[in-house]
Image (cartoon, rainbow, N blue to C red; front, side):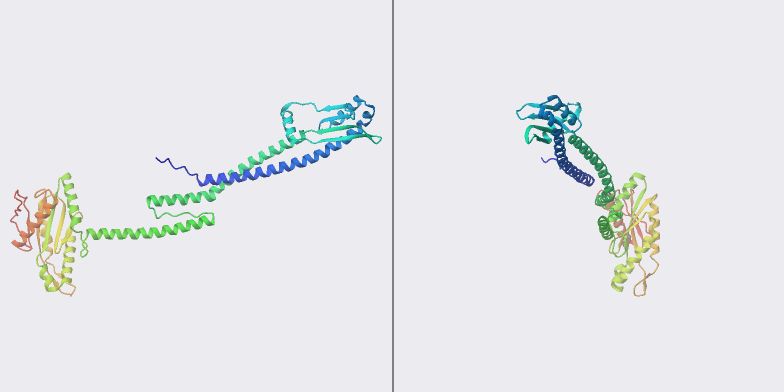
Length: 427
C-alpha cells in the first residue's frame, strides 16, 4: 500500500522562502561580520585605554608605594578607577603585600548579571606595569578592563541586527508580493488556462500579456499552440460531422439512409404511444426506373433519383422524414398523424407530382411513376420493423395491381401473411 504523495509547495511559497532566506542570511552575515570586527576593534582600543589608565595610576600611587601608605594608595586608585572602564585595580608591593585593591561594585540588573559569564567569555584586557623608584621596581600595578562597554556594544549591535532583520523581512514580504504580481500571477494564469484547456478543451481561450519578456514569450508560444489546436479541433469536428453524415445519409440524394430511418421510426412510435397520435410509413418504388437506366444510362438514372428525392422533400411537412432505402426505393415517415386518411392524402399528392417531366443531363426529359404502400401505427402494427415490412408488402401489391397507385396494409395475421386493402389510387 503506497502512501499519499507529498504535497508540493507553490511557486509563490518557494520564491518567498528563497528570497526571505537570502535576505536574512545576508543580513545575518553582514551583522555578525560587523559585530566581530567591532569587537576586535573595541578590544584593541580597550587594551590601549587600560594601558593608559594603568600608567596614570602608576604615577599617582608611586609616592604611596614608596611610603607604604595603604589609605593613600587605595584613595588614589579608587579615584581614577571609578571614573574609567576598570573592573579591578590592585597595587602589590614586591614583597607580596597588597597595598591597594579596588573592585568595581555590582550595580544589579540584567547587564550586571550577564557581566560575569560574558567577562569570562570576552576576556577583558588586563595590564600589569611596574612602579619604579630611583631606578628600581618597588611594586606592580595590575588593572583589568571592564566588560560594560563591550556588553553595551554587543547589545547595540544585536539590537541593530534584529531591527535590520525585521526591516529586511518586511522588505522581503513586499518584494515577494511584487514578485507574485510580476512572475507568479502570469504563470498561475498560464497554468490555470492549460488546466482548463486539458479539462474542458476550451481552445478558444488565450493567455493575457505578461510584464516579463520570457513569460510573455512563453504565453505567445502557448497561444500559438492553442491556435493550431483550435484549427485542428475544428477540422476534426468537420471530419467527424462529415463521417457521421456519410454513415447516416445517402451520398447521391443527400437523404437519410435506412439506419437513421429505423432509429427515427422507433423514436416516433415511442412518442406516439405517449401522446396517443398515429405514425405512418410510406414505402415508395419507382415503377420504370430500370427502363430509364437501361435506355438512357446511369447518369440519367441518377438524375431521376435526385429529382424524386427533391420532389418528396417538397411534399412533406417539417416533422416528416424521407429516406432512400436503396436502389429506387424511398421510405417516408409521417409523424404525427391524427387520422390514417392523412397518410393516403399525402400519398395521392406525391404520386400525382411524378407526372411532371424530369430534366436529364443530356438535355432531354423523361417521366416516371411511383407505387406506394402505406402502414399505420397502431392500426396495422406497433413495431418499427413490422411497419416497414407491411408497407413494403403493400407497395408490391400496388405495383402488381396497377402501377402509379398505393395500397394500405392490414394487421399481421397469426400465420404471418399480410392482407392488403383493395383500394387503389391512380396517379
